[in-house]
Length: 404
Image (cartoon, rainbow, N blue to C red; front, side):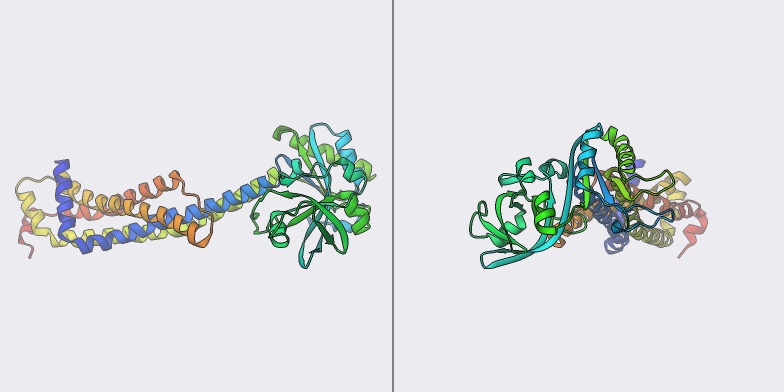
């Protein structure tokens, strides 16, 4: 009886092809929209995670300026500033640390021959590559000797190499940074854009002492990047850094920190929470289409029950039971949901790849979202098919046979 009911349900849908297709349309659009929206949300999350991971693994960032009791951030110039000695003390006195990279930065105009470019110039230590997860594609990176001698050497990003030296090899070439001459010794591998859309290849890195004394004329630094040995010691290292800097800056127990220590684990957790909320919001908006599709199924099934009242009466007169009639109409509703769900899955996956290809957005199609959307389409068909099926099964056979 079960397979016979399926055959009868399919025959009923084929008898009204256009009506069946239009009924499925709500389910198709709903399932496709859910998969596409979830894939966009997961793509955003993956891009943010990659961007944060690209900053460096097990990274702790120390910034000048503390946080007031009200929660407002204190300006970096309102108290004791971070110095190169602070960074050296962190590397020397705190255990569980792999590398320490102090840095300063400022935007300058770069001139190479008859071409010029405005970019960010960072003064860093020889440990920049390890801490910030960069790699040199050609040439070399400067060493501790270059840092101590305040050498005028520079390593440039791929964007600068492509724009200023499109026709030749930049290694060994001379550039002027704010009218000061520098020699290019290396070019970074491309890292692409960050999560906020910034070009990570649009930078120049020079020794921190060169930047401080020859370019900026300052004794303080803008931040300290600290790489912990593993994720398990990050919290301990963060607390040790805070205690050390408070002692070095001679802060009393009642005085607020004049610096801020952050680790990327908390940043990652916050970013994931935000992107998960966005993904859930997009999925819920798309799921409204599934609800509308379910209402369409109920509407069409009620029409079908009315049109087939005499048929139901004849079946009951020939011995069809309540369960037989109920199963027949339930299967029709579920077949609409299953067929619409399958087409919707193809539409959703195709839309996700199309968005990625033509809009340039990163999308991540997950098996979980496909299973969830398809399962929901089946439940929608079952839920909204129960009332029409029960109404058909409860029809009195004598009244049904009299129905015109």
